[in-house]
Every structure is written in structure tokens, then in C-alpha cells.
Length: 394
Image (cartoon, rainbow, N blue to C red; front, side, top):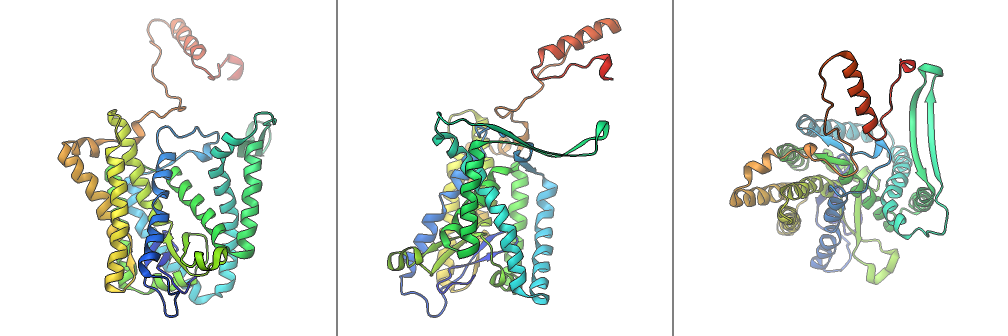
């Protein structure tokens, strides 16, 4: 996992970057050029993934594709769970053979990577799929029991376009398992990052501050306080980072010297930036001031990380600089514009997203039981897709 010109070390728990200097025997490519490559190639991931998680995101056909909202309680517990997981991996690599553990991880991320890449390719496939070809619908249904006790275990709907995406993703997956090529790694890494920002939502700005603040402390402690993260990162092989070849012009696609950026340094700030994008939309001012401010702050924080690493020649936890930048700049802007109260009182869950059915009115109930029954019947008939209950259904 460690290359000759490694510029970062990846945290296997939160998939985040640890910037380090080049090792002995590294390529003669200038440092400034290597750092510019890593920074410039990584920053487009944040806005694209934030756009996919915005209120105009495409509707999701399956319940498993719906976003998972991170509450303040989840945010507070996450650094503790991540610390326990990190230390558990450290013990695993100390006790068991590294080869067998990485073999299991390769198979695990092989399956996850195929599914994530297929989901990421789906919107693009919908645009390029020929209208002349039939797009058949399929349903994968697993149930348990029979009769009235029948229970659905899996109920997944897909079509021909999804099957094509799955086939292409499977080819990339086999390529990654056999060759561990950096292009296959990046395809899986981008898919994981985009899906992470798209499927993880923060409900409030205060929740985002709790999450980023907790991971800020987590980052600093495990990087500067112990060697646990360094040991695990050296042993962990998985597509949990984006790699940028520094000798691409010299060796082409066979490049072997890389700068790397952990996915967590995209996903963790990305879900906060996506929240600010939804906040911009809720203001109904046709501007994206907070989104662009936080996005530029992300670039500034990443550049500052690289600068400090170069100055002190020591591994740097990226969130040490990304968190103050991504949180501080938007908060200062809100304070300047007099919208700080609105920012911290905004709740993303209160926003009615497109394609999300909501009950907007209730039937008026008054009079006798007969009038109640008539009122409920009229409500059932006026609600699309609502099943009308009859006495025989009871």
C-alpha cells in the first residue's frame, strides 16, 4: 500500500488522508508538481457528490437507496466507534496474518465496489441508453414464511440499464482484484465517495459541527499520539483512497509512484458542504453563497495541509485543517450577513424534497359515525396510490 513517493497515509476506519513526505528513493518529480496533482485532481469530487445529494437529486426506486440521516447522537458516538474499530484492526493485524486479512478485505470491497460503481453509473446510463432498445423491468424478491406470516427480506427493483451498469462494474471489479491497477482503484474510490455523500445526510448544522469536531479530535489523537493508525494504514489494502500517479508522463498507465487522498477527507467535509447547499436552496434567494464558500474553504484547507507537511516534514491529519476551514468560513459569512440564527435553526429533514409524498391535509371529522366513514372514504379516494380498506380486509 505504501508507494515510493507516498504523499499521504490513509486512515482505514474513516478513510481519511494522512499527508506524509516522500520516502527515500522516490521519483525525481518535483514536490510542488506532485502536490499540485493530488490537490487539483481531488477537489472536483466534493461539488459533484454534493450536487447528487441536493434537493433536486434523482428519485430513488428502492428504499435501500434513501439517504441515512445522521443525528446529533450518531455524530457524537461516531468518533468513539471509529476509535474502537481502529484499535480492533490494529490488534487483528498484530495477531493474524496480514495476507489473509487483506484477502478477505479484497473480496469484501470487490462486492461493495461493484454495487457502488453500478449505482454511480446509473444516471449516466439513463442518458446514453438507446431509446430503440427495450428497457425491461425486473424485481428481485426474497420472502420468508407463507400465508399471513410471509415477510419480505429483499425487494429490489431494477431494469435493463441497471444490468448493463452491473456488467461494466463487474469487469472493473475483476480488473481491480487481479491487477490492483490505480485506475480501477480510483473508479471504485470515486464511486464510494459519491455514494457516501449522496446517501449520508446531516440534519442540522450543529450536528455537522459535532461530527466534524469529534473527528478533528480523533484525527489529532491517533496521528500524533500513537502509532496505531500508522501501523494499520501500512497493512491495509483496499480502494479507500484516490491515487494520483506522479510519473504518468514517464511511465504512462504503468505508473508506480503515487500521491493519495483518503476518501474520508472527501466524504466527511462533503456531507457538510451538501448540507450547506440544501440550506442555500431553502433560503430561496437563487444563490449558492454558503456552498461556494465552504467549497473554497475545503480547497484552502487541503492546500494548507500540504503546505504544513512540506514545512515540518511530518505526517499531517488533513481534518486538522479542513474542519476549521469548512466550518469557520461559512459561520463567519452567516455572522456577517446576519443569518447565523437561520443557519443553526435550519433542519434538512423539514424540507419536502421532490418525488417525496407527504400528507399535506387531513379530512375534517365531525358529526355522526356515518359522516366519519364518508369523510375517510373521500380521503382514501383522493389520495393517489392509497389502498382503500373494506370490511373484508379486516
